Amino acid sequence: MAAISPDVVSNETKVKKKKRGRIEREQIKWGLIFLSPWLIGIVVFYMIPFIASFGFSLLEFNLAVPEATEFVGLANWRRALFNDPNTYESFGVTFLFALISLPIGMAFALLLALLMNAKSVRGKAIFRTLFFMPTMVPLVAAVLIWGGVLNEQTGWVNLLLENVFGIEAVGVDGLRWLANPSLIYFTLTFIGLWAVGNTMMITLAGLQSVPTEMYEAAEIDGAGYWRQLISITIPMISPVLFYNIVLGAIGLMQYFLVPFVLNGGSGFPEGTTNFVGIYFFNQAFKFFNMGYGATIAWLIFAVSLLLTVVLFGSARYWVYYAGEE
Amino acid sequence: MTTNYSTSSNTTFLNKVQSMINLRLLRSSMAYVFLIVFAFTTIFPFLWMISTTLKSRGAIFSLPPTLIPDLLFQEGMWDAYVEVWTQHNFLRYTLNSFFVAGAAAVGQLVTASMAGFAFARMKFRGSGFFFALLLSTTIIPVEVVIIPEFLLMARLNWLDTYLPLIVPSFLAASFGTFMLREFFATVPEALVEAAVLDGATTFQIYKDIFLPISIPAMTTLFLIAFINNWNELLRPVLYISTPELRTVTIGITTFQNEFGAQWNLLLAAAVISVLPLIIIYIFAQRYVVEGIATTGLK
Image (cartoon, chains in turn brown, orange):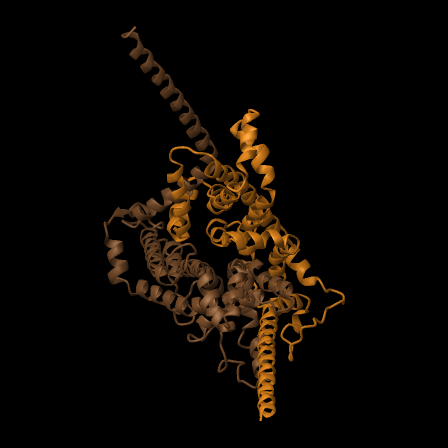
């Protein structure tokens, strides 16, 4: 008896283990089946290219002369970081534009969202529909349209400024929205503002989730509108603002389509639109420098990552998460 | 004395109320001025675009400029549209865009609903790792993946076909997966338990419970995916060279290079590219806006 019983016990646990193993294997099987189309997509179109791109950055690899491909180690990286003034310039141009465009865009989105959330404003549904509509316009069409409206000779904006407001705007000495290096970033910001509806909606959703009791309590304490805005609204929606800023900053690092449609990536005027996304495209798909292009791409990724880390680091000081002390 | 005191207090009180009302009035009228100016700025480019397409070539740059087109209700009012549709092949481009964006969006529904289901409701080893993978793809810029993708497409002999415009978007549906995972997670556990007791298989639970219940979320995802793929420009620029295979967006870009100054034609093409999306927006605004406001992504 005594000799049999341990045997039986161990047999039982074996069966249990086997059973548990089978269930687990079954679960993994079904999990992988359901994940598989997505997983294939992610591996083939994200993970492998992501790593391959880094591999390419170590090659001298031009698609025009593929037979001359050779391993060059970190030569591309040295060139991008130390010997190529264009890289610095394109990053500088991108940062400069981001510093102008991001605050203006965020301020407008917040202002519009506040107005769309204000009790005293009537016709909000109409305004909201209207402000969101341009986000539906394909970028190509949007750039085309604004190119026409802002045309220095024939555009309505300049004709209006000149004939109604008496500002000398029309012509080569006037306001050349798309050709003046000191105006171009504001023009691009303005074109971007046409699609502010997206950010406005996200901000609005944040505003609507602020509990109304907080405002009621503040009202009783005698806090005015601005006081409430600064002490309640902004802190309460700071996670949403933070999210918008992170997405906006990452998006601007990849800013490419607007200048590409506007001038085909020529950098006009005076190189001010040579954003790093444009520089990448020109290296990779105009000069077919796949190796050096991949290096620029990885630099864009590294800088975006760094930016995200810095922003998340700053979040601690100004982003308020409910439930945390 | 006392009466005097009280009267003066009353007037200051009234003054205060008066100035408060004024301030509020001033503030709200400033708000309206701002909103109306911004609304006008928003709507004007649309008006200008439509108006220009209904003008004859000579009237486009007439001075002073007018928003009421000269061909309005005249013969040849739709000439610009007819010309870009028939002579400049935009009928074909539009159909191409519908096909590419539709196929990619349907694909995203399949891929994202399956993966979203797995992430939300299935517990298996490794799911945490795969979820981290899902999140990590959102910070990888397109620049990093596009060179190897381009070479892969060339190797597969897919250049100058619709496939590179559909397949990556079809399969790598990370945004949709994330969105449907969030939605599936809200489905009551009791529903699933009841189905399990009835002997439903995993696939039946997915097909008979989760898919029907998530039609609103799936509609949102379909529309957002359709819009994004309709707007896609980088991939058509890289992959399409045969004119017949162009999508609307790349059609406009090439058209612009060839016929730069013919604004009535150019903008007619722009209207064609905008119209389907505006129609979607008007009829399905709730879905589109909800999807963007709740997930914060487009």
